Length: 254
Length: 254
DNA sequence: CTTGCGTTGATTGGATCCCAAATAGGCTAG
DNA sequence: CTAGCCTATTTGGGATCCAATCAACGCAAG
Image (tube, rainbow over all chains, first blue to last red; front, side, top):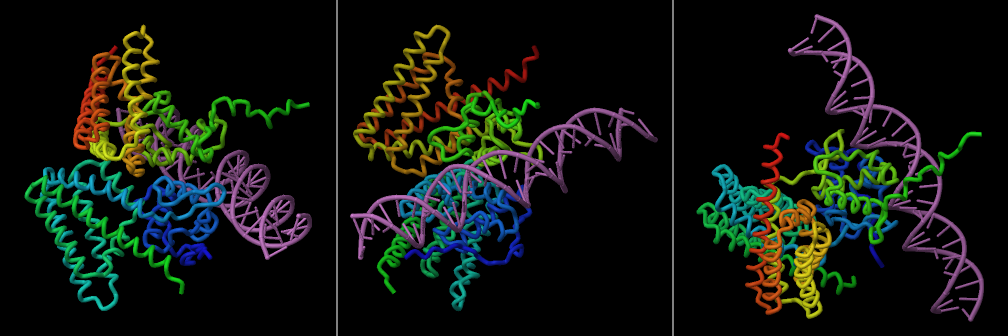
């Protein structure tokens, strides 16, 4: 009945770099690695993370893995079930709606603050990110099946764009909260929702351009409104897509 | 002929209650206990938490303590310094301002949502909480030096009041985010700011009454405005108080 | 054939002991 | 008085052990 994926992803033991430079210690890097793999879909939602298996795979002992899994639980990426283990959570439609509701409010606010506080240096970075969206669209248009370049670039642009806005807003705790929200509903889902559709991507890029414009003019109200609507549209699209996927997989009986 | 006591010598173990009912496991309960002690000022800001000391005091081994400290770090209560240990963080003025800025936005939103979605059962609880504020004011007025009853009741009322609003708003993730924010700037600071001042408390109660009124009328806009302003006033008062305390302790040379 | 129950295997939660690395603070030599 | 070394503390991580727990399986009774 159930697929029962045990997620023994890429059997490369120490080949995968467990230790990243900017992480404080082993546990931090494990958290980073696991979160990335989960976000990338490498470790599918619903699968179990066995302490021993993870430990062996990453070439460490059970102890740091335990702590890392607990961290992932704290941020909502994983659920810990008593004496059974850690399971990767699949965000429900409800989760997505709720989380994006918060995104909408908080990003709108960050945008308004950014419009008033952004530095010229930050504005340049924002413009650069906005330009990268258009490059990504071009990538996708000329892509022959392989959309990975377009995806990577779009993802990078998106991350940088919203990061700069939040940074410019100047509220570090806001940045932290939003970061946490992204752990609950990973960003890469957005790309799936955009679904390699050039028209949607163009619209998305246009929205970003509008936001950049409002911020560069120092128009806080316009920035808030546009960001709010931008997030709302993304959210609606995402919910619709996820619903379709759910529908699909529940009807199909191949 | 040796005493042979060592085995059962863990007499101090169950002295302090390490295990709470609704906590999943030991680590969770440690987190709860430590957070409470820190919030109560029992463990002062800036002090170190030694793994071994905490472990012995709570009658557990170092391992769950390590995980608990890491949890506390994740929520910002404590900072982990490489090879030195965990230090209780003292929220800066900046922290307070930023965190309350988020409170303002999010609680305002929750209030607006609550005005439209609240059930009659929740409305009753909200009214009960609001009534408790007035009892707390009365407690303080008749208190002869000992304000602890008033404080306890006010704290209880405040927790319940805002909890119901958030619950009524229906966004579980919003509740979680706000809960996390409270770990960064503990609620009990608010009482210190109110400073046993009957007039301030009365004003505070009046504001809550106004919020209750707006929500019970289903007036989302009024609810948002009043909650926003309520949090803003609390925030300003808090910042002022903390500043005064800081000033005080830096000027005094007794 | 189904239902209920006991057994068993897998897995976590926690304890205990161990060791390396890093840091603060003291001590010594110049 | 200062630079540099030394040592005590403390954390980070590993290894091993054991008890509690839960799922799944199989067996027996109806």
